[in-house]
Length: 83
Image 1 (cartoon, rainbow, N blue to C red):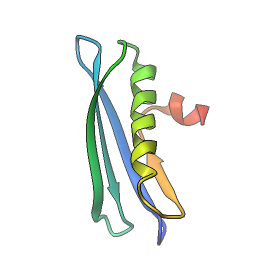
Image 2 (image 1 turned 90 degrees about the vertical axis):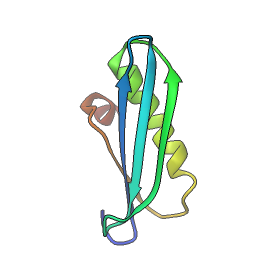
Image 3 (image 1 turned 60 degrees about the vertical axis):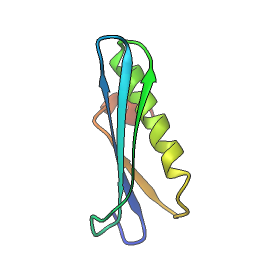
């Protein structure tokens, strides 16, 4: 990310019983990890819903940091395009 910004990578992985494992890592422009989280949530088997749950959790994590810019990166182009 640009100087002064943080980059937040987020991913979601489904289980067979409808739960989602959500993982996220927050890094500086030097690549230093300044935050990380993992969360398991109930959902459906819908991939788009799981990725949206991951984005929601990532935004919650990002709100705990007081920076001007956070860049969120994720696999789901459908979610990114909807933003």
